[in-house]
Length: 268
Length: 253
Image (cartoon, rainbow over all chains, first blue to last red; front, side, top):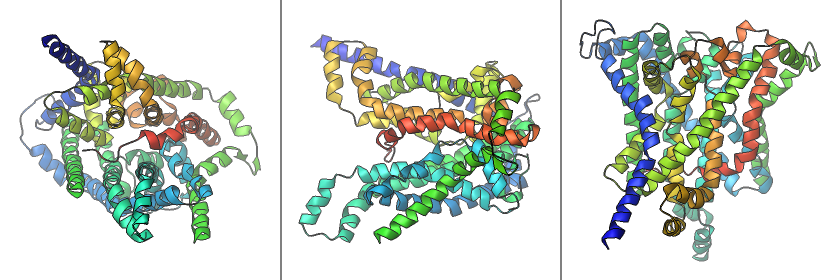
C-alpha cells in the first residue's frame, strides 16, 4: 500500500519537474527582469539610483505623448474591436452553417493571420499614399485580426453537438429558438474571449504602424503606446520606459481580469 | 437569400485576398509590363538579401523547434501535476500571453543585457522560446484528450518521457501543427526584436530588410515581399486544417 502511494508521489514530482524548463525561462526573461523594471521606475536614474517614489509615474501620466498614445490605443479599441468581432461572428456563422462552396472562402479570412506585416505594408503604402487619415491603420488592423477570431469562433460553432439541434427540432423548436437556446449560450464564452483577445491585440498594433509610417514620429492620430516606448528606448530613457511599461501592464492586467470575470459570471 | 450571401462572400473574400494578390502582381510589374526583371535584380544583384533571408529562416526554425518540447513538457505538467497554486500559475501564463510586446520587450532587453546576449543570435531566439502562447494552447487541448491512454502507459513504464512520447504526442497531432504554424509565423514576423536587440547588419532579418525600404532600390522590394511570404504560405497550406481543431482557446478559466 505504502509503495503505491510512494510511487504516486514520485510520479507527481516528475510531472511538476516537467514545468521546470518553461518556468526557468519565464523567470529569467520575463519575471526577474520585470522586477528590475519596477525598480527602475522608482529611481531617478541608473547611475545615481535615488529613490523618487512615484515621480516617474506622475511624469509619464503628464506626458502629452504618452496621453496621445493612450488616447489613440483606446480609440482603436472602441472603433475597431466591435467591427472585428461582429465581422468575424457573421463570417464564421456562414462558414459553419452556409452552403458548401462558401465554406471554401475560409482561407481568405484566416490567411492574413500568418502573412508577414512587412510584406503587406508595401502595398498599403502604394494604395493609401495620399491618405493622411487614420483609416489605413484601422483597415490594416481589421484585415489582420479578423482571422484569429474566425478560427476560434468557427471552432466553437462546429463543436456544438448536432444531436442537440435534432433533439430540439423534434420538440418542435423553430430555427430562431434553436439558435437562441443552443447556439448563443454555447458560443458566448468564445465571443467574450475573442473580444478580449482583440482588445489586447490592439495594443500590439505598433508593428503595423511602424512598418507603415517607418519614422519615429508618425502622424498624431497613429502615435500609439509602443511608439512612445520605442522613442524612449532610442533615447535610453529607462525610467519613463519602465514607468510606462508598468502602467501598461497594469492596464492589460485589469482588462484581462475583467474579461475572465465576465466570462465566469456569464457561465453561472 | 442563399444567392445574396454567396455574392457577399465572394466579394468579401476577394477584398481580404486583394492585398496579397496585388503584392504578387506588382512584383512582376515593371515599366508598364509584366516581367521577371525585378526578381532578377533581387536574386542576382542584391546580395544583402540572402544572409537576411537565411537569418529569418534560422531564427524562426530554431525558435519553433526548441519551443516545441518545452511547451509539450510544460502543458503535460500543467495537466497532470497536482500542487498548490497551479491554477494561479496558469492564470499568470494567460496574463503573460496577453501582454503586448511594449510591456515585455523592456524586461526581455534587460534580461538579455545582463546575460550578455544583446547583439547575438540567442538574444533573438531565447525570449521567444519562452513566450507562453504555446503552453496555454497545448494545455487547453491536453485537458480534452483521453486520459485512460496515459494511465495505461503508466502501467508499462515509469518514465515521463516515454509516457509523453507514446501516449501524449500521438493525441496532440493537430494541436502541435497549429502551434508550429503559429509560432513559426510569429517568429517569422518579428520586427521589434531584431530592430532593438541587434546592431550587426549581418544578424538582422528579412523583415528589417523590407522595412528599411529607403536604403534599397524600390524595384526589389515587391519581389522581396513575395519571397518573404512564401515560407509561411506553404506552412499554412500544410497545416491550415489543424488550426480550428487544434486551437481550443475559447474557454479559459
